[in-house]
Length: 82
Image (cartoon, rainbow, N blue to C red; front, side, top):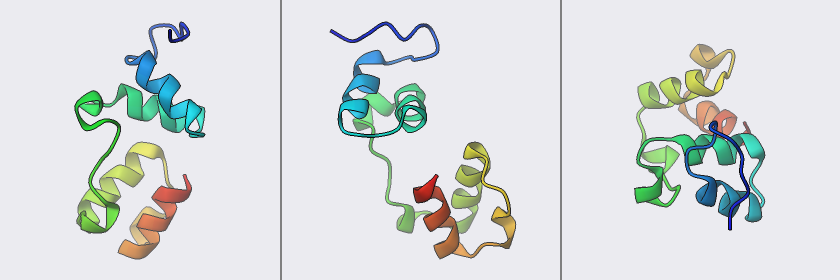
């Protein structure tokens, strides 16, 4: 049974599963709260398959600074390290 994380976690079972896999609290919450995440099982398309515009949008969502000066490979690396 999943712990009660309050209203801020929309899918507590998925959150707990991701935490058990070793993901950070922030990343687990972001995945568990994203629309359609339960359908995808927490998986998204590979970063390399996304356009630079899509990567810029993702970087903005998670608060990466200096993103507009990065090329596609740098954006991918920054997103993965966040």
